[in-house]
Image (cartoon, rainbow over all chains, first blue to last red; front, side, top):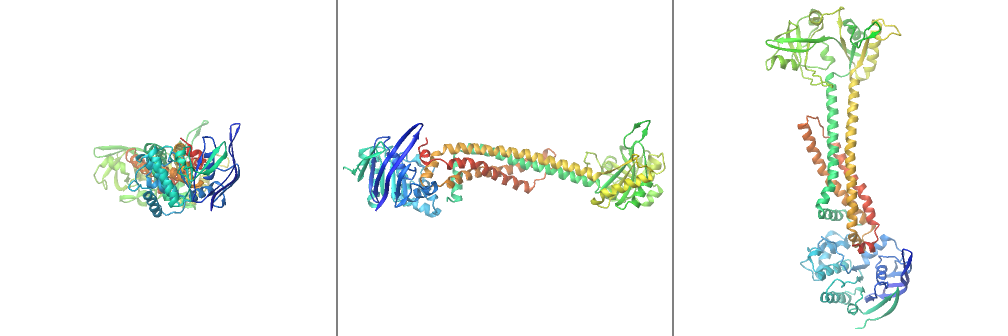
Length: 229
Length: 409
């Protein structure tokens, strides 16, 4: 089943006088349950691609179907709802709310749908436990290690049962050992929970945990094949 | 949509993070609300005190003053010529339908002596109707009778100040005092009326029968001469009618031609005092308006801090948007934060305002009245200030682009 389908996606920015063609004619299909690595040097368009399929940015032209729905022309609040229900984000800088406990950080996405306070807490506890953070629910991000913070962020991405997890350089701020742990966690989530993962990275080692690698250069897809192990 | 209690929790946490800043921001609202409450309390107190004083003068009261002399082209002021007589007073009572009672007055300053104490006070020669005209009661003894007036008996009613000065703690009833060396028996004690609107001590007074005053104390150039005539109209609505009737009657009695000036003047005291009260109400309004400005300034302080807060928390806003916060979720969060600030400030301000008001009435000798209306008004107003000044920062926050907000350092 196709989860992500793009047709001739194009994204043009205006940077002063200059036109920057960040995405050019990108047509891709990603099936549910795939683990895809998106690679490319900086400025290749991979981040723009992530933003568009993450419903954070609108394409200039072309079509984007997420789970069969055309979301490329939706308005702000509708996109917010799609992000809430269908997409979990994991960022390089973790992006947790400071001075807020791990538990409350994980509860945040559920504030924006109709989850009851009790259910919010239960779900967040469950997600933290599943990621091995039992006993750290009330720690603030500043009291957690980088790996732990990223796992809180992953718990937050999972808590709404979103079918798609988008990870933007999730290991960029972590040491090698922790990076491997986080990547193994992604593999487990992909295999056991059947979560579709799209991962942006510029490190081949990290990309090697995926099944398929898509390479970007100057806004074009230059290669799309099974990941070499 | 995000629920209000959750948003409220988020707001409280955000305000706790910057305790000092939140406290300083609230200070503007605190001072504003406290000022509004205090100013309204002072204004209301003043106008209530005034209306109390007005009631001590006597309700629906009109006073007839003698006119001025014109000698050799030089016009004297009111009262330079004694043109009124007791007969005028009696005529007014008899013929003016809008008039309830009338008390003619012949007054002057006199030295009074009791034992080894003496005191200079105002002595009013008048009739038994005086107490009714001025809504004045006796706390002991009796009023004059018609007989006292007819027979020019030497009896008197004492005001509270005179009692204090001459008798101290002694009971003055049936004692004999001397007014300009003439002995008088004290037959009644007047209740205290306090200060008049212009600060005169209304209790520094002695009432004696009009005829006694005319014959024994002040002497008169024309028979039955009086200085003023105090009149009580039947009702507040009858005041103007009574005024007109008195003017017409006196012009006729004094034989004043159509083009001649009155040799007397009729004044409606209640109306004058109403004016004074209107002035005090305007003053109270002005005070409240000035206080509201400080509340407004407090609101601007909130807006300022909320704008800073939105900038500082751009990344938080980005995170919330990325995980599904909609436009109004973000707006509500910041509006509720501003309302929380202003309402907490408002509550502290109410407490402070009440304390300051109590302090003022205790130490600055001001009459104050804290009205629940002012408390509710200023609390509601501070909430509105929160909504109004919180909206723009919240609106700005909700317009952020999630991608830029997430990348914001």
